[in-house]
Length: 240
Image (cartoon, rainbow, N blue to C red):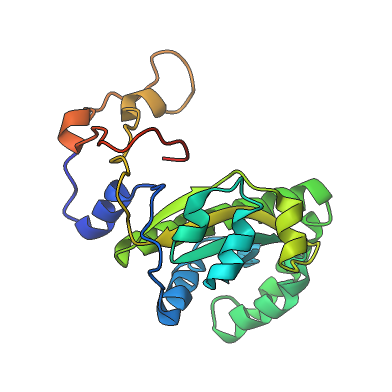
């Protein structure tokens, strides 16, 4: 798909980001880059601006090896430069008043909105709603983190297979923080595939209603035009 003239570099980052399995071991990440990734991740939207996300960054080899034991022994966890354990804070609503004060001081909205935001806080007393919103916000931040890593010249690989309870106990994570996702970030090693094919837009996009014939008729990109061929390196599994 041809990129529009508006912000083509941003769109190119979204299109060319890929998930990898193989990292170059022994390549540390500067602390300023660790902090930068957390900063850009935190620019994601969140429900009621509660910013449920928290990030536990592991850069010490021993700590990464410890985490690997709770992540099905996946080598990328210990080989990558930094591992981000993305957490979802179930008590984020307790910060509603402080965040509302900050928004009022920044003249984003007036004092008259305080009562409205207080009523919003009541929605999170429902356990399922609270959990869903916390995980949703953490997921949005996770995608920001991986896109930012790509923009900074790193590659990333999300890890979905892990023992959440084991991770929490091993790293002293409070019980009200859910382990949402683990993200490996670092320098690309050998043996990775290129980006795997995506479904064409006219297969995934519906207009107005989900019914037969309501798919958007848009030109799809061929696999060849995107360079979506497998490279040598053996079988891999994981997220795309």
